[in-house]
Image (cartoon, rainbow, N blue to C red; front, side):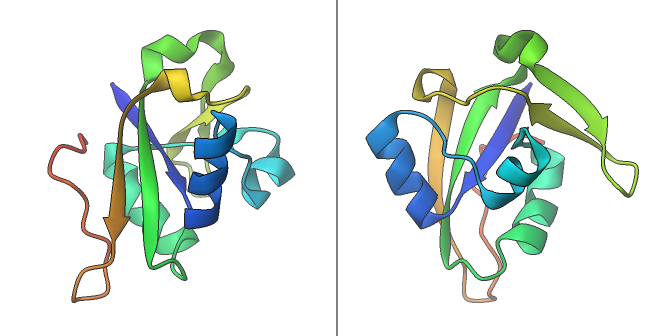
Length: 114
């Protein structure tokens, strides 16, 4: 199963430089790396990246993260993947730069699996 990390343009530049996903303000506050399933991705983009014109989406196989990956309920009860560790470039299976379409919504690539 693939799970996803969304990066802002600034975070993507840091990822390219450092070889690991930087911690977002939410990651720092909560003590883990916030990830999403394919089914959760559109909602994550709408809720947390509304001011971004372009993002980078990183895909990682959930099984390769081992015990550092935990599935935990959000405030609304939905189970989200949380990584209690660092997300390294070597963990990434695929990545996409995603921009907003003419309707103002992010256009997810067809190969993002839900």
